[in-house]
Length: 203
Image (cartoon, rainbow, N blue to C red; front, side, top):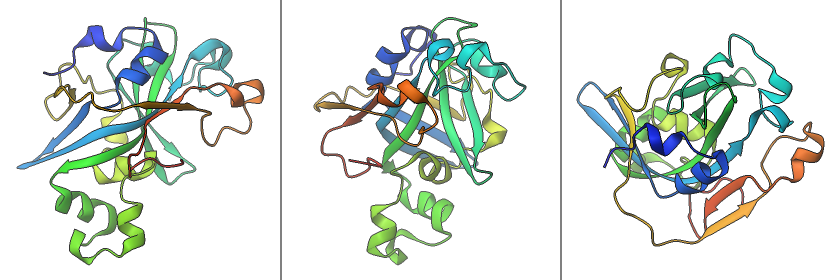
């Protein structure tokens, strides 16, 4: 079942948790990449010093975060990595969930070419271990780029999320990664991942 607007238009913490186990689908040409979301982080806007929209900050880059829930917010991090976020909650709150890790389900060969420019069989153990366990890595594997920024997951057919009923897992809550500048927000337990997954970035 494809996730609709009502799924995303809710409390951001709740959405971040319930995205775990859901499936992200990316289509281009004759290819259909499929991955299961295993790690997320919530960014709650105005009072969250880890968020790009802390204190109501608005820029051309972050304007999509103030829009309708269910849209992609894709930005370039450190000038190198595209990070995939999904806008959540009510309009004008500036909230979103970062996708941090996925487990490949189908077309792993195509994902491998996207990530490493070679087939999965050619990858060494380190590359396999670090295949899609991080936000930049999953974006690369799924071929999600800045061109996808602002796309509506609820209407676009080339990238969307669905629920295939997978629920047999436990959720771990922890501090978010890479926001040392965020003062007290460093300690918010806004990172969620599936316990035991091999595709979690930091355990």
